[in-house]
Image 1: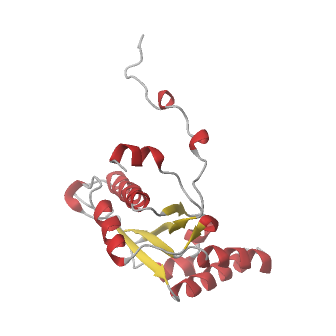
Image 2 (image 1 turned 30 degrees about the vertical axis):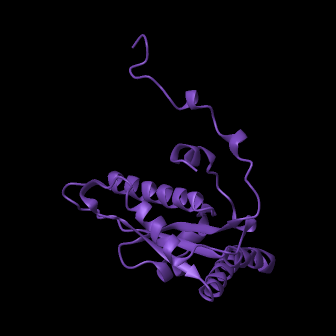
Length: 190
């Protein structure tokens, strides 16, 4: 798959559509290397990818279930959230480390580096034959879950669910045409 065709064929694949096998350590290293190629002013690397695999998925499922109960989702909601942690072969917690007082690199540039790293990580996964999806929601704001993944000064952004896709996603129809996002500046007549 050449690079441009790979970019144009990537879509998110949710946890319920992911099965074993998940990526190997070597494949994960390639995904991380791709993430590190994202634009990053002053090379701050303001992110970490924390791997949840094997029996650690059960601990994540327990955290998700407890958070669901705390959010008054009941036992059915707790079971659904636990399943979201158990289903993908690999879950990658995405943690941001933004230097709020950096003299050269403002926060928005650091956040852009985090987003670029996530995109490159997911793109590399796709090119290696895996499906994935970035997930967030209320769980990232749960203080118990955030504390489980974050050191002081870090922010939990969410999780990337990764695995082998059961099917090809049908997401192309939902994307806007390129002309909807390409805008000349200044606009004619301005």
